[in-house]
Image (cartoon, rainbow, N blue to C red; front, side):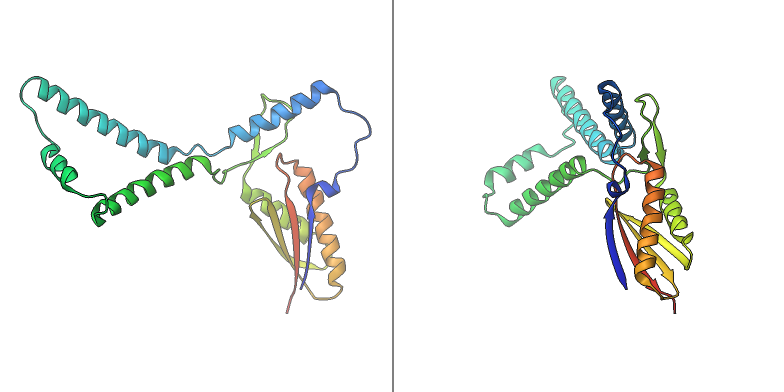
Length: 211
């Protein structure tokens, strides 16, 4: 088994001259626009929080209005809750457990909001902030696997995305693994450079002998 790692930038040739400042800013703006367009919106957690806050607001409004008109509904047993809170010590196991549960729920919602999710599309450079282009991850991995399979001697190949790394596993007949590793790497990096994705990706090649 032979493994090799190389980054996408290693295949990019040096630029022949300076890029205009205006075009460079336009390219960066286009990249940022593409990244924002395909960023996960976190709709499910937002909907859950919005529904809970709406229900809480309605409950407070109903209880307040009913109390003002002299006919409190008391949908929530405030008296018992107040009595339990005033007679319960901070060290009470039930109180500690409830506090931990509430804290964990809040922490989970905070992490969900801060940690970026897995985008459904991979942004592609368009050099125009008004033009947004994206590729499905499955389409990208399929294209990279096909590029590896075009190398003579490679019977089949599989490509997977793991964060910022593309892992390619070609299956060969077992002779000259170093050559296979180098040629598969070059083929995959060439195809990856042709796709012109906004985010850079590392490429790992793990050649396996076909029995």
